Image 1 (tube, rainbow, N blue to C red):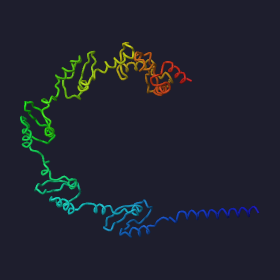
Image 2: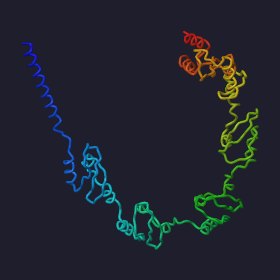
Image 3: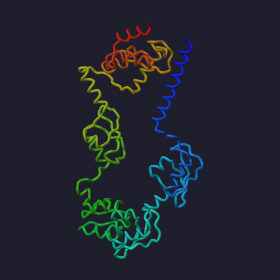
Image 4: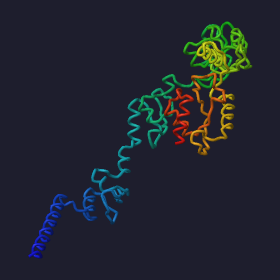
Length: 375
């Protein structure tokens, strides 16, 4: 009896499995893989010819020949979406020499060139006034026409001289004209000689000395700087944005542009001392920066004293920091004190500041941190 029930159960399982497979097949909607014959039939219905003899999938490239005979690769999926011969498409978009000639001559111009390759090719064109010039079809379509007719032709030295000297008292000394941006030697009515581009002269810019805009000389700059008790070490002056070497009244040597000096920028070290003195209520001290020689000497001394070993974890490390036990920013008088330094590896140093703060860590915090690391 048990064997009969088992066989019946097995038969039902097989039947349900067959029904499930049939259901899955119906859900797929009969999407069977395309054959090479079906693909060829569809492609050749458009007048194209399929050169490939195998079909793998819709995304695999096939070799196809267009009606004109151009051979190109394309996937069946792209072909179904309307992708056709790229060479035929390009030729359909490209202008012909006749179309270009028709467009140019519609403006009263004449096209001399007999061949056309692309929109960037320079074409020989004759304007309605008879001036011959070169221009690409792209530029012509944008509205650019004969440069001579539009008065944008290059000026001659005679035309430039005539224009400049038409302003009473001005004289042109230059004998060569390059372009509107090239500097020319000009003499103003008072006799000042200066350089100016023709474009700037046309815009109305005249003699800078007469206008009070004459470039400073090294002597004038030196006189101005030394009037504040500073001394100028530089021997040349290029412009207001060029750095100059200056010595402040206290003797600090620094660099600053003349433009910044005129704006009130003075010795940075004196300014730093002044601010620190205010913080310390008038107590004097010798300041230094993080990357100064004093800082480097202090770091070297701390590492040497601690035998180049992290004093928190005591593990050997190539990356060591000299840590200020009492805050560098809050205790300027201890910045060069070796007893205020301790050697820490990079990991311990970052962990210490992460736990106790960047500028608030103290000697007690260091002792607690070391005790926790040694557990």
